[in-house]
Image (cartoon, rainbow, N blue to C red):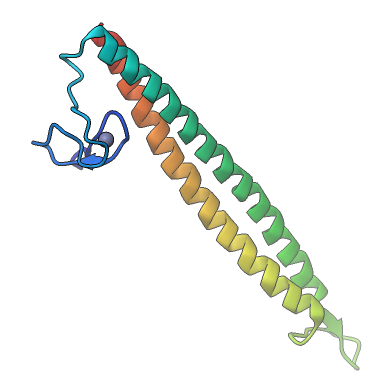
Length: 140
Ligand SMILES: [Zn+2]
């Protein structure tokens, strides 16, 4: 898989031949950077890493909440089985328990998907900006 070129300042996708980021208009040249430029880059990278770590944490929070909701949904699903007249436990979809099971289940799955994506994109960004940070330290 071809590695996507991204802006070293804002992480926006760039064409291989592009030197100026179309999103933040900054000139991307890690190898020929003066001291002031390096200093500025590192301050921005620090900020970007912080933001992407926050994204990861938010993602994890949603994963935990989603997990709890799915467990609740399973409990309410079990509770929606009722004894019939022959004293046999049967699944009863009309119960309040089953409605709660559907709601918590849907919210739980949505929360898991959102949390997973948030964490994944946060991790991709965090790894990317950390990598640029390492590279900028090697240039010096
Ligand atoms: Zn940019």
